[in-house]
Length: 421
Image (cartoon, rainbow, N blue to C red; front, side):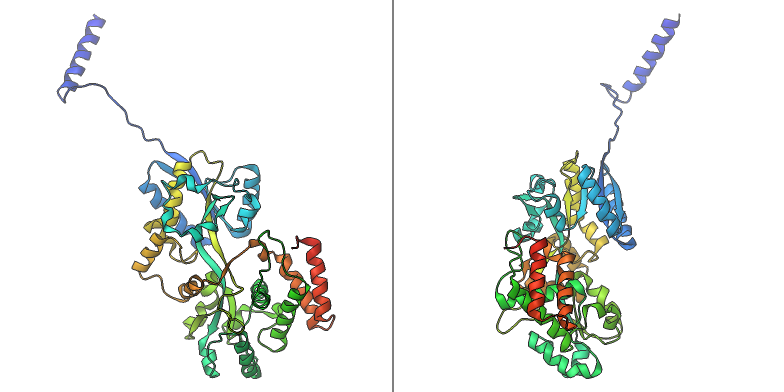
């Protein structure tokens, strides 16, 4: 009896299904997401727009779930070191250019993005730009934006003294002769910026780079003396304040008529000054004599994206990387907050929406159009290098040593702690 009832019910069920068409099989479809991780550093503003952009990415790619990890710079740097040593880094990560030499000198520390070119549109980047992210012939990272120390001039102040925008070092010293009666400095710079300014001047004088191709210091005692003499002259003749006396707020109160700072810091330095009505320009790089502008100065990636060599999902990581670099959606959220994007697609979008204007963009153009700027060797930003230089220069400024003695002592310290050519 029970068997007949079950058979009857089964027949009815099949008849009902048959009325909707021929039944071959019943399939229950289930979406399975692949989970990957992304990390970056930044302030609250960056965190907010990146999270919003990732939510948009997940709508476009419902098959991919992105787990985010972020913090301010110092915390991120410390955490990154632990992750890289332990092999627990995120699938896609924002990195500093110096980390390529630190974690991947042979190119094996990060994934070779060239292998993922089907998913990452590398045609948005020139070969010269991609070279910054290569180690050992492998594309370990792709730059997001480029950065360089740049000379910013408050044209309003210079105009008030009847002075043109300086083009040479001599122009700056002539400006100091006019401005010093009002205790106004033609050009100010913080520690690293002043260090790189003095390196640029010395390279223009001696025709060689501070580091050679093997990252050995190529400057000798005479070259270091050129740097020390130049910095002490800048201070003594009131072109620039002592590095220790540099104060950013003096850009706003008119005590600094110019400054040296990164392209990425343009608005950080001058937004309030511009809002107050002064005209700020990104000037050509100062040179000596007939040398082309840009000689002795350096450019580097402001920041880059890399993919973990340990990722279990390279395809999905590549899709996310392409979105972060090239998509209109990410460009809309990010704007120029990380610098003027290098990606042609991202830049085209910002051009269409009218965002490629203003001081930071002008500074980027000065950097990009200057073919005499060299690629930065990241050890040149080593804090110990420039702090030792400052200490040696102060011996001269405070009559504790001659520039010859200071240069000899600085050379000996460098020889003790660094590889020399």
